[in-house]
Image (tube, rainbow over all chains, first blue to last red; front, side, top):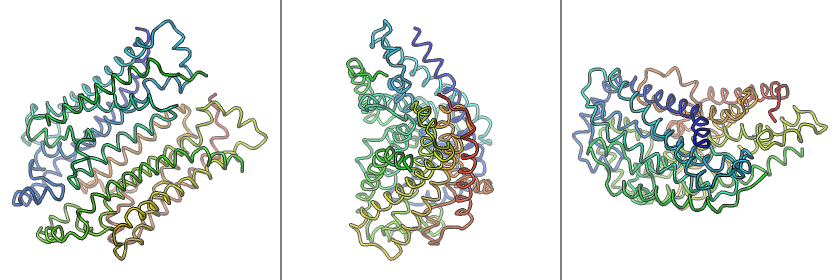
Length: 267
Length: 264
């Protein structure tokens, strides 16, 4: 329990700043919704006249009109996902390697607790931090929709799936980062790795959107949980949901076993 | 000069890792480009669309069936990558002694603290130059599978200058944050926060024209690859802002950091 409490306390400041930051970004986007929807309703009219294949070739869709709340949120949600990805990658890279970095590993590991307990306690505290961030975001998101929708029609239930997908999304990035951190000799800077993972996945998904390439679809969680698809169809990409769950489980379990026998650098 | 070479040597490996990963990105992108390269169907499709629509999609200026137009799409991402690298470099080059607990050793050497920091800063600038040269060198090498259009090389050179100017802004930001902030563990988070925020603002600027006044505060809006490709120039104002910001932040760092208490 001590480890759990200590870890949670350490994350508390980080949870607050991340959720404030992400909520702030979403608020910034939504403030400009009224002006954007005016400008884009004309665009929507033009777009609706074109066949879907043609638009798809240019990375555009006429699936959800951009002048509606749903379309606008779907357009901008990937940027929120980037922030969530960086947050969970940071936690993932930090979770186990931080002790080595701060030269506290031999202190912690010489205590009468098994590595197994350390791993599980740390894991649970990260999971709680991640869930808390999502919860704060979800609540403020609904609040902001009420304030900024400017009388446009939308339904709360349309976004339920989008918000719940964040949990799978975060866990995917988090467990992959934990696994990678176990293979790196000494993690010097968690933030550069986290930026690399978060933005790397995003850039791959941007390639996917630009060129419609099939390979990238299997690599990047931004495609697994594509907001446009989820809002339009009100369901997950079933195949990709399973891929993400499988990858999450495999990386978590292998990270667990690697950590049990890993050489930890002492001071 | 020893500090200078030591910094170069220590940062060489991370630099190479960054360069290799960027090269992999460029390579993956370029293999996608093969489907577009001189593809007449694509051009026909573009001509079919009404001009306002093409404009709105941001494709107005660029023709994605030729190397330079295609490259301009990728360069948007290069700018972000360069920004992150130089921000983290700026903070690590100052703070690593405190982080790795070597500050007491280094700063008790019979050399002025300010001079040591100055050598470090210079090494960082050289590393930024190497990064930009590396990225655009590999970019040109990878794209050389295709026949270049007439402005390709010129566009690449301009983009590398733009990337360098963006890099030194974030490098300066990293330096100044490390010098001024007392809690060195927070520097990287604050820096990345600022970087992400300016990036998001530059996105919002594409959605609405009501916040154009923020363009001077968002480095990502200074250099837009489609603009560079269209005009084949870099706006002087922004170059001066970048250079001045770097000079100011170096001076502030050199004044403030030697006086700050080391956290050891």
